[in-house]
Amino acid sequence: MKLNTITSFLFLICFSLSSIAQTTADDPEIKKMLSEVKSENMEATVRKLVSFGTRHTLSDTKSNTRGIGAAQRWVKSEFDKYALASGGRLTSVIDFFTIKADGRRIATDSQLGNVMATLKGTDPTDDRVLIISGHLDSRASDVMDSKSDAPGANDDASGVAAMMELARIMSQREFPFTLIFVAVVGEEQGLYGAKHLADVAKNGKWNVVAMINNDMIGNSLSSGTMLRDNTRVRVFSEAIPYLETEAESKMRKATNRDNDSPSRQLARYIKTVTNQYVEQLDINLVYRNDRFLRGGDHTPFSQNGFTAIRFCEMNENYDHQHQDVRKENNIQYGDLAEFMDFEYIKKVTCSNLATFSNLAWSPKAPTNVGIEVKDLTNFSTLVWTAPEGKSVYGYNILIRETSSQHWEKAIFVKDTKAEIPYSKDNFLFAVQTVDALGHSSLPVFPVPIR
Ligand SMILES: [Zn+2]
Image (cartoon, rainbow, N blue to C red; front, side, top):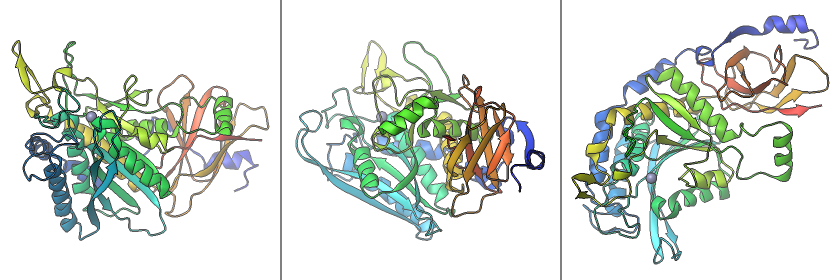
């Protein structure tokens, strides 16, 4: 196509300006997978994990009925059941590593172990990796108390249950690249399991396109304010990447990219996909890496330069979080399964599954995404390079006003260059690839081209 001929060019643009949820049809296979998510499975997993009494990182590792060791071996045995059903494409391991005494929450040198299942991709030339996690460890009121009961039903058996449900369902399908499902440990002692895996990924130069952390996704009633809300879930994403070179920082400021980090793009992607596939669940984008002054298992991944976000329930209940199991003034404290909302976990798991499978089937993202700035014009021209690998059906140019938190429009095009009647002075843009079934890559924010 002659791109200097605007008329012929505009002719080729499919001008179906619409809300982005309508630009792609539902993928029947994703819908089928979503129908396989069962709240009974989540409840059974949570209750099984609670049955180990405590899963404190430094609790008993020898017993087969109590402590972190028993819990790790049980999760691995479940992964191994899924592996059988997957025809051996899913493999599992307890990835042990040593953490030195830190004078804080690790009293003596300790061996920790993440329980990890890997679903190998079908395309050996596709080196992308997706990671989903929950944390296996739990805690009582005293973070160093490794003996008392610490059921950890919501924090974070809920996240582990979601991760395991994805592993079970997705391992029965084929995806082009590697998917990792992991129950990390050491979260309550200082994010040690996630840090270990993030370092393995960084040192191994893994091409991690997204890391999704689920931590507390099963409680729908807040303590104190008594808000009940099972129709929203928070997704936390960093505004400005932890790792930013001086040149990147300069470019971010020049292009007003303060709200368009790769992790923020992932958060918006989750909102789009959830709107499309999950009823009665809205993604509440929180413009923070985590809750105020706090962190989670996605944080070490962000710190290593990866795209990572956290799912967390809309309202937290502090009577059932980091509390010894006890009754005081007729109030039951403790993170017990009886306080959980398993229909809510199911919806959040569906959001995870729709997102993860859409990404896992997506073509690679476009590269060299740029926006032309040589002429003063009220049109904007975006150019990019088609990715290698899986064939691309087309591209979505995503558009929103600078004050909007979410993409408002999508223009579908087949070419790798497009001129659109929206001024770069008034709108923000990004470009994503789309395959024939509507699976889309993460959006890429353009850099100026002079
Ligand atoms: Zn937690």
